[in-house]
Length: 426
Image (cartoon, rainbow, N blue to C red):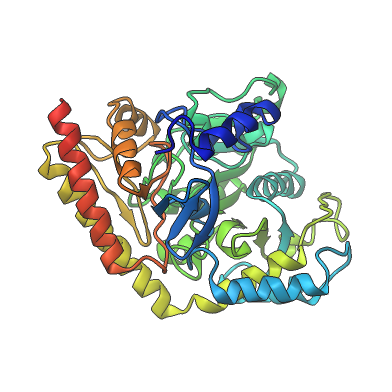
């Protein structure tokens, strides 16, 4: 972990003078785990190197964007070639078409795609589209699910909002969330005819990992159908990570609208919303629901995304699933052997770590696990041994295709040592 006088500490001090809090996304701050954030100077495969030359085995992986690992040669070459032709045009490109073709071919029910630059843009636009086509205003979301930082969706958000202990955000007027109903994850709410959309992470991955309980997504689908509301799957994390066709394919539940991000941008800023043609045609310029973005469909990002999607065949998902299963079972055994309470849920290629004596089923359970106070010292111990987890108990563990079995075993051994040290301290 960076110490006083280190290059990372010096950079953090400089950053705090010119960047609020010294970070450009709150979850990068080490406030909930203590210490100084490491500043990355380079990365390759499963590892990152900080400004002091310290190398870390990385399970942040750009919060899930780097599914093939950092600086994969094919991705780097694709971006290099694209940059040589120009970095942005403000005009359509073939790369946009090819990426949209690849995504829509992979995901049943997603006939058309609108590319944007962030997950926040994607979910915000999906909600606007749902309101536009239904003529209704009410949106139902679930406590602990994070759908970006647009005003109406911050209520009851997980991830960085939960990490900072915020109920939402100052600066969001009551009117902005007046039509947002927040309900417990895993419970099918009453969906009335005033509801435009229900938005949900099909596997909640912003309060740690909470897989959907049996019948939950099916109940949401049936409830939306009865009420004439749209079901939106926020697959910014799960899309093209848990399976090529995402969580909708794994669960057998097809939403009306999808949002994607992270993996489909290949590590560059890119996200998307998609759905059937009859809904997507309501977007401008065909329809009256407006959305725009100067850098939407950026040629570097589409090139990177295409390069990644070409690498994600059936064998890749099988390999990644095996790695995650090995990591999850090893972590659970290592922490339990030290006598600490632990839960390590798995949903396909996602996992997370809770210091809890009982399974976590919702945001309240995730908060109780975080309140144990065990995650922060465990995080610091792992970082001191060269393993970088997310600096928050509300995030998932991202394994990549670049992580080797030997590295996973190394991680488990260091987790055992960290847990034993933590247990001895009482």
